[in-house]
Length: 83
Image (tube, rainbow, N blue to C red; front, top):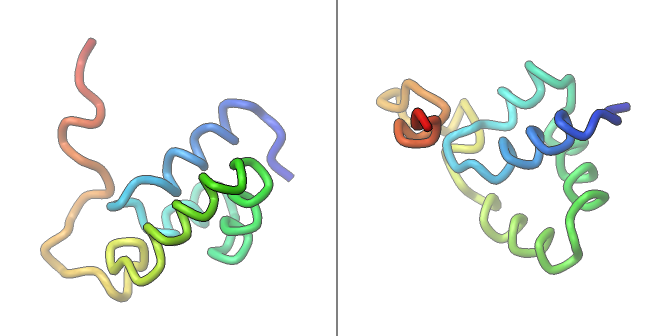
């Protein structure tokens, strides 16, 4: 069970990111897609969870086997800008 605030925050962030597949979350945090959905339901407000589900449902970039071979990274190049 994930209890550290920074891990909870990072999983939520990864789940919202379009280019981060569920498999990446499973690799880092040992949460299957089904478990990520339950996790998000637990930690998001009901409306936020609904918006997230609508956003990721059918999104090809959230599943490695559906992704284009042209996608070689899991995040936007501007995501981790130097501050």
